[in-house]
Image 1 (cartoon, rainbow, N blue to C red):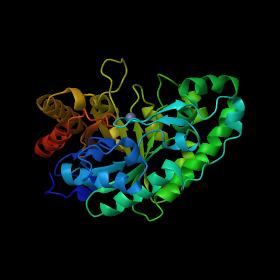
Image 2: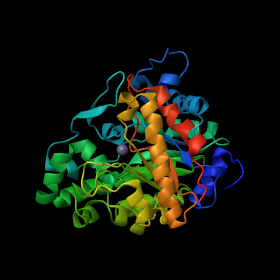
Image 3: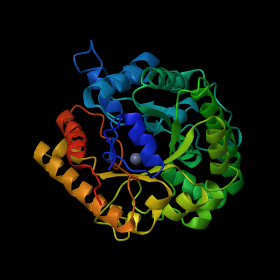
Length: 368
Ligand SMILES: [Zn+2]
């Protein structure tokens, strides 16, 4: 076991698979951190937060002060790109926004798509806000941006069910749209790290999920050199490490890990779904040999569970991960985290976020 480390030393050692003083911890608290921005009595609305880069950034800065995380990942939500491509987004005061009206509903819509002006809209807020918080926290924790992958951006623009049907009937139109969205994604990558403050970029690749798409379909519509390969190259070229977030039930773990080589794979686990890989499965199958795995505390637990139950769940996860890691001779490549974003609502218990951090600090050593 290593001497006491700071957040950055611990993160770098974990990414390199080297000994650490304790496991990394970062429950995916993002939008919920706006409750900590001073001057709003805990009631800063989602709309105000997501339309103002300074407020967006301040939430991460306050969150770091309050919870003492190892990392900061700047997710806004999954409708940023879609909104700027013209989808109508419902923005509730205290919950995750979602798309109500597609940006287009004809085949021509895919074919006439154009890259929006990324300096405007919420894309512009995300670019500026990410740079602000990554700059403010650069000496304290490893900070990264967060974007939706090409296919997820498309389904957010035009509704998933419709896109999946149109893949069969009008594949060339879908490809035209994906090309434009990939151009947009690559522009975002460069802009978000123009000051070289973001160490990595997390991509939400929700549709790399066997419950929705097989290898062939996924390979045709995202997991190829034209789309995902291009955004990964842009990510690496901009000086950011490539990170995957995929909270689906049956993730394409093998393709995501062995073909595209992320440095971090942030995932969920659905114990009631047959074949959904548990932390033990993922570690045993060798994925934590190749990248840092993060997960898998159930997000609803941050609303529903008592602090004691959250403590117990975190303890159990730490124990499970330690056992599997030691069996495999691994020293550090797992981060205690939630399976997806912690709900950014009033009902989320902040003390449950703190409980995950505190338990990992206390019991996260890996003394194999
Ligand atoms: Zn997720």
